[in-house]
Each structure stands twice: as structure tokens, then as C-alpha cells.
Length: 90
Image (tube, rainbow, N blue to C red):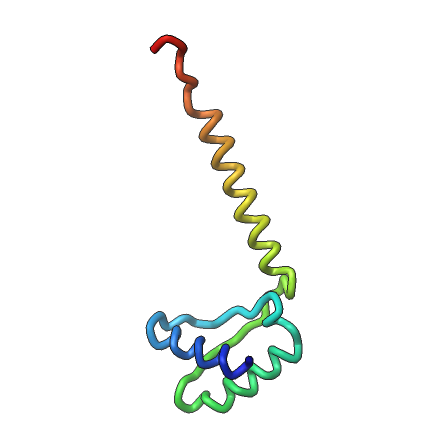
């Protein structure tokens, strides 16, 4: 799995040139991080990749989902508050 992640990240980096890839969720498990770093080290001469572990750890997807839900709720509330109600009969 570590090899697959590194190869996919390598393909993405050839197109987008990101500074780093952030590992979160199950990819942030210490065994997975070690495997990814080992494989990335094997390819570092041809394709230098940088992998960082999210400070949120395995809960990162949940934290992101809660953040997106909160942003959507704020948007809906502000739209409802700032949009004048339609007057009946028009």
C-alpha cells in the first residue's frame, strides 16, 4: 500500500508540483507512514517527494467534514438572513 501511495503521489507531483503531501486518516498510522517514507526514499533520486503527517492524525477526515458542514451551515444562515422574504401576492 505504501508503494501505491508513493506512485500515485509521484504521478500527481509531475502534473501539479505540490510542496508536500499530507497523510491523514488511516494513512497517518505509524506503520503506514514508515512504509511510505521507506518507499519514497527508494525513489528520491528520480522523484523527490515530501510526505507530512497531519497534526489531526487519524481524525483529520472527520475534522475536515465538520469544518465543511459548519461552513455550509453558516452560508445557508447568512443567505437566509440577508435575503429579503418574498411578499405574498407578488
